[in-house]
Amino acid sequence: TEILKSAAAAFRRRGYHGASVDEIASALEMTKGNLYYYFKNKESLFLEVLIDAMTHIRSEETKLKLLDLEPVEAVRTLIRFSWEYYLANPEFIRLINTENLHRAKHLATSDRIQRINRPLVEMLGTVLERGRVAGVFRGGVDPLQLYLSMVGLTYYYVSNQHTLSHMFRRDLMTPRAKAERLSHVTDVLLGYLLPS
Image 1 (cartoon, rainbow, N blue to C red):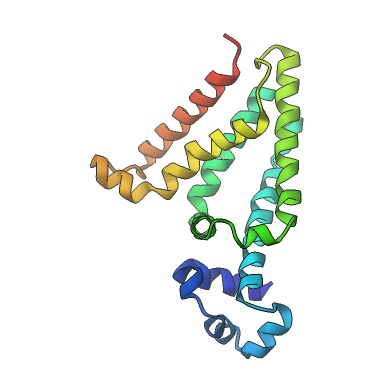
Image 2 (cartoon, helix red, strand yellow; image 1 turned 45 degrees about the horizontal axis):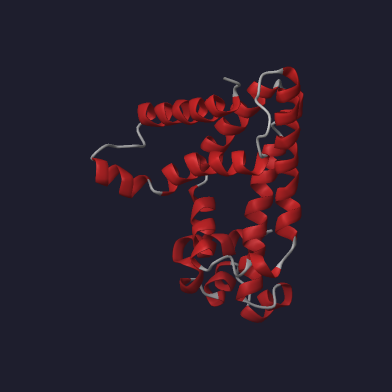
């Protein structure tokens, strides 16, 4: 909805504490009272923005049709998607970082986030099991741990690009650097999955 788009833009620009309901309502040319008709307070609005952002990334992952791919290609595809999604959607990273600063207090008020995220881990588990049965993946791999490693190796690089580039005096966002990172992450994760 337009309300969520406007609210997401405000939270991205100013963070949770800096964004005001007045600013969001004004951008929509509505009164604060009208905004409260849809969302009872700033906390519930921020929660809906987070859930909308999570729903979007999960929806895009579903379009990958990982279960239609061979296991190795499915994992490669998910790694590439995660990497490219974070690069293309820095606002997603800012929202998640903001919620982490708040120790997930908004997400903790809703059980919808588990329902949104569970299918991805289950799908990845199916891919891993198919790979194990086919003899291309080793057994005993926890799909959640694999997904967390994938996110850690991609998300961290993008979310910390400025500090890392400065610390190491190397522009980590050149096309070459980004291609090297994707290749490295793919090699690391598939190296872990492939039987020795």
